[in-house]
Image (tube, rainbow, N blue to C red; front, side, top):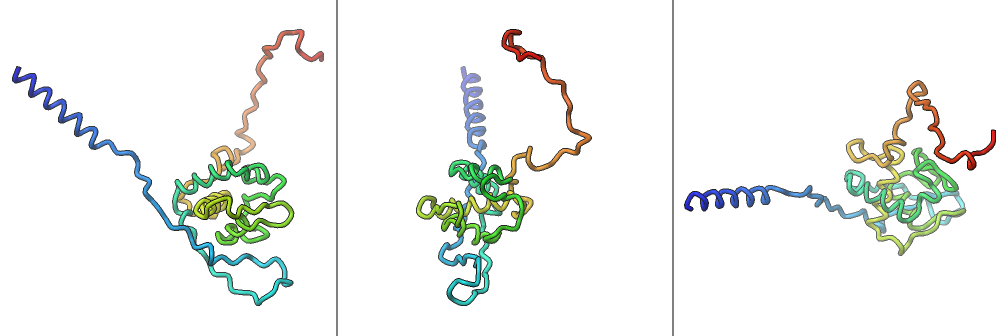
Length: 187
């Protein structure tokens, strides 16, 4: 009886030790997004009023954070950016896999493009997306063209990251049809 109590106590202690040592990955990396009030948009022409201001670099801390880039990817799908820009390769909207864009490729310029919209199709998302989510989108969009640090998560899917050399492409025979003969097209 005494031996059974000792075994139970040891088992209970081991269980508690195991439960106490189990810890989920902590993603407590919280960053304050850059202030949206400091953002200067890129001039498109000299016909705008005022003197040209020097472009001050705004650092987006979310670009250093893999989970934030991943959240940006999720938001990119949710807000249907894929509908126009595809998965970065462009569609009816311009491609995002290069690093030169009409309205600038700096984080603050991309932020302004998302918030303000642009002529000929880019809608304004002002008051529709919180600033921190816009900054996550900015981090993801810049990751598409490789403008974020290499140690942060890659924004592209694995099948889009590397093009296979032509010598490695598989040429498989098509599988035999499982359709009944009556449903097949005549040759």
